[in-house]
Length: 420
View 1 (cartoon, one colour):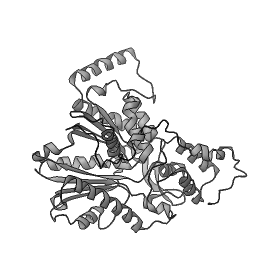
View 2 (spheres, rainbow, N blue to C red):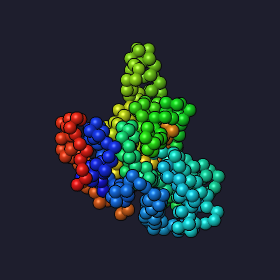
View 3 (cartoon, helix red, strand yellow):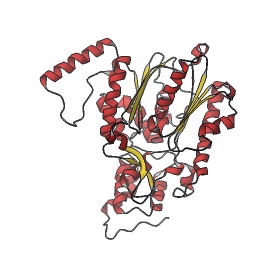
View 4 (tube, rainbow, N blue to C red):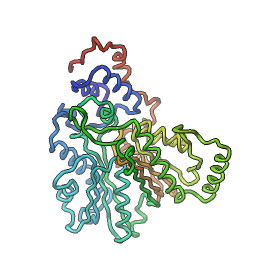
């Protein structure tokens, strides 16, 4: 776990940081919404994040693969040989043989298993994986599909001092999940969720969107993940375009008609927000959605979606608590948010859950799930050991209390602290 004390030790190991970078990092992490129980890979605890090896990345993935897949197979009663489709998405680690091949080799999957190994798809990759499976299900009947989604942090720690790239070190944490999908009608009584629709929006043709979230080298040749200042604008643009497509698929006709009327009235009265001023949606999504499962890309992402869709704090709670407890676990974060809803016994038969995710490219992907039966948590839920303590009275972390003295330092006399 990455607590305040350990975070400070990691930052002090980076001799590229000066007072201004320390102040920036302190401000960023205090306002990040991330708590002290998130996870980092073992390479961080051995102090080797600046000199990662290929084996470090592979070992991190193997540990996750073996744990999550074995638990899923045990709970479902499915043997590895029954898997017909395997989709693996790990954006920032490409290996030869592929990571999907490592899973096939370890679990001895069948020779005719259909395999998809996705890289570089970012935080929205899990819904891309679901879409791949959905398309396969249209052609092949009575099959099992296994989706494995995580992110490799071991070889991707940024060791420079570029602020747009340091930010990723604060937000991203270790995590992942394995998902079992099937179109076997005989399993209908065992299903938890049913996919109703899925929409993918890609703005890669826009240079501004393409470059706002990208892996690159800094001025000193150090590789990192750049998060540009125009990212919120790119995310908003893709989000709006995505909503235009999915709204007619998930909302009742009466709400769509009301939207047309209200939009016309607002246009005629010239009351629309100007320029880049934030805009609230004129559609009441609660008429077609019971729960909102939002990607934990950061506090600003959650706040932005909450404002746009006029969501309550109760509706944003699963995403905020997931960010606080687990951080941004990339493409798997949606499933941590969903697990929170399950652990809190919010998901009842017939409820509709809207998933919204963003990713490099720039992409916005969303889908609607229907809860097939009441979900009241289970022994395998990732929140089982801490759900009773959430939500906490305050999401404030102790970083300012411990490191606030940095704000009063003078750049002419400041020295980088020695490791304790």
